[in-house]
Length: 376
Image 1: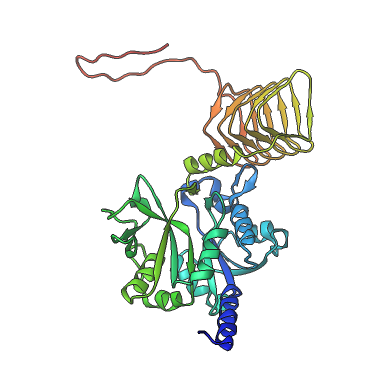
Image 2: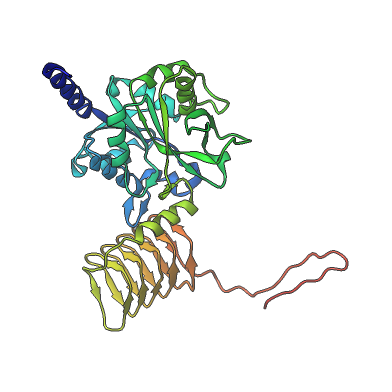
């Protein structure tokens, strides 16, 4: 029979485990080359989906998981990130900014954050990733079990673009490889990792990869090679790395699926609003048709236009005598007199207008015995 003192001691240990401090390390320092030219003038983590920066969704998920101490890794766009996030109080978190002189890899980010992290457990969250449903369940599981590392995996059609995990027959992680030319599985690492302080020895032990970066996959592999407890969770829910335009538009579509109808602006009698459309304060819609899910941002004007499903128009934009669908329009831009725009990401303060009406002609260089069909 267990003695009462032992029961009390076990209860204290369980409570201590639950009360263990978990911090968050959010990476927002990358250059965003796949989203250029948008990211020449804006941080990729601040490009909005459904009129809210991608980074904000991650910070909200971290706060919902009960994590309050958050370190944000920043680089060349540090000032913009600081201005947008502030001290974190709007999200219910306390933010510490951690400079990284260059994007030298995820493991390097852990190295430069050592002083902030100390010996606490932490979640590492890539600021341009989007996960439906948040991370609360994952953090609770980690707090209860405390493996040395917990990684998220999901099946992808092209594993060569990601870090890839190899599992054994029991589902244990036996190997990791960064952007392999010949992947051993189709399980890619999602941009959320959970670590105990054991990872610090791993990141100090790895050498730069062929890309010149300190890879977090190598540090986790070091844990595996040293028989540390590395676990994985395969998620079937929605996840996207919003590093390119196609994925950004897809995330925008996914978020707009949940938008609640709102009319806080002005819509005249000649306009038609169909489905779940959010018209924010100060927006004006006249002589137009909007089919949801869609958002028209504060102060924007929609005049004699069509806005189709899965379109986010940010604040202070103008859509006039035009059609636009499945697109994102950022702050202060205008689309005027354009017959059709779709599957597009339009940056801030952009003007889209018709091209000059030049004579139409086909210029051909054809080989012998060719057959050509021209639609005139």
